[in-house]
Amino acid sequence: MRQVAGVATGAWLFEGEALAGGGWKVDAADSRYNGQIQAATRKAEGAEHDAFVTDAALPEGDGMHGVWMIVTHGNGYKHGYEIDRVEKQDGKTSIVLTYDHGLRIEGDKTTEVYFPRREIEGTNSFVIPLATAMTKTDGVGQDARPTGE
Image 1 (cartoon, one colour):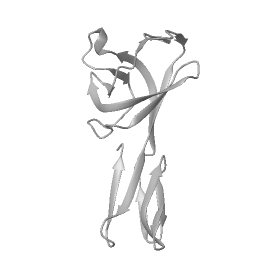
Image 2 (image 1 turned 45 degrees about the vertical axis):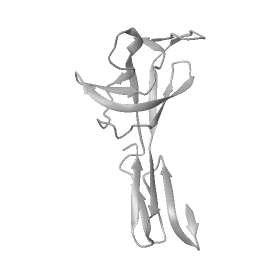
Image 3 (image 1 turned 30 degrees about the vertical axis):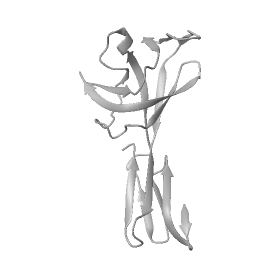
Image 4 (image 1 turned 180 degrees about the vertical axis):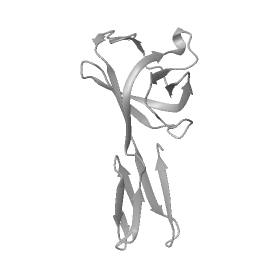
């Protein structure tokens, strides 16, 4: 929380549902999204997008543009990927990324296409932590600005 002359002028909520104090409150409908990655597509291999495919219910559109997702591979390694947008296709959710993720996913086997070119056994899960912020804009009203929702 940021204060000016003892008055709250800003608050940030990361992976939470509510934060309140001094006559203000920040709410978030969801604190995070998570799920399993079922497939991956790459432009370098002829796909329309660099994306992860999941059956998790995520909000469609560009509301998560610039938000980062954390992928945990079957061996416990974690990597972050920046989201461009979310699309629904053929009953699945495509998390379209800003850049090439450099992975091939076939069943429970993930292969890195770039160095060090590891083969990883097991499923890939993801979490998308969400954040919401509030700042006072005129000394009277408040302007809530959610990110990732």
